[in-house]
Length: 360
Ligand code: UD1
Image (cartoon, rainbow, N blue to C red; front, side, top):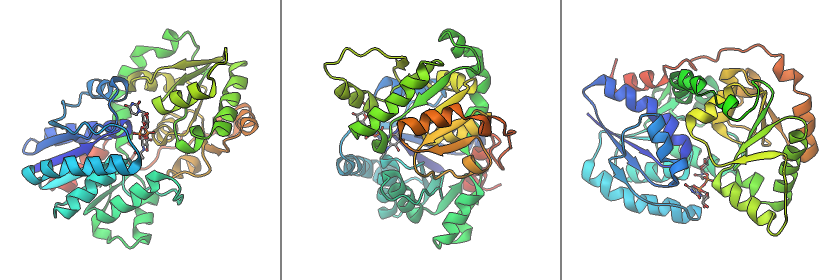
């Protein structure tokens, strides 16, 4: 059996790693990896392949950055000949980035079977490019691998036949479970000179938060205010770095916030696992903090991962300085909450995916 995985952007890689391992363990499957090149900086891509021990991609499409149309079209054009030549029995796509939808479109028009890892998440917010990518990818997929029961419900409500939907659990948590001992052994908090439980990790990269100068100024203001009280560590996504630089052009700015380059998977996990608070707009971090029992403020009006608010440590907060500062100071609500295990967030989601693909 030939399975071909298409990945392209940073959050895809943590989802690919456990699936690749489970397919290799199965023995009789040829697993081909195609990297679209949507993310291309070493710190956004290569570092993750190395740390997560993912084999080098068999094909690299070198697509790079661009507008949504340019990026999606480039993936489609460059992927089509690869899929036409290899004709896999199953094309696997991951998450909700532009590479995900582009690959699903190409594969479906070639009549290939498609599996979507992390199917069924919905924010209901059509201003998010990821929501468009999720809904359309699910519509095109034959096997929908859902991380949570609410995702299954979303798919059933949209009329997806039940036999296509498989509640396998969360592959992001597979990677976390596999890598947590190595991450803890890194002792990243000590390397950064901060004490366990007494610092904030911040990450922000959504266009809705960083592309508007006024909003970004408010968010940086919140981190500045918190940074005066407690260490704030902020690994900065390239999109955000660019925006911060244009905001501060010409100013001799000093800051309470520790701005870092994007960090690898293990260092991030090591820092997040011992943080007192995470402030983020990432999808993955909402899940990881819930699993770890670390309080999380998600700077968004909605989330496609409501289970992290209902059962986990996540809380939504408006993209406004005072709202974030107040929510960070008043963390008692989430801090006091006992850690609730979430169904099938147990490190075995990829194993279940491979059982569905290859038969029990
Ligand atoms: C993409 C995903 C988003 C995901 C995020 C994780 C889409 C629509 N968005 O957003 O869902 O949460 O990845 O990081 O697919 N850049 C670099 N080096 C890189 C990659 C990007 O400098 O390796 C810069 C470029 O200026 C680029 C910008 O970041 O234009 C945005 O990159 P892009 O891949 O378009 O979207 P992300 O914001 O990373």
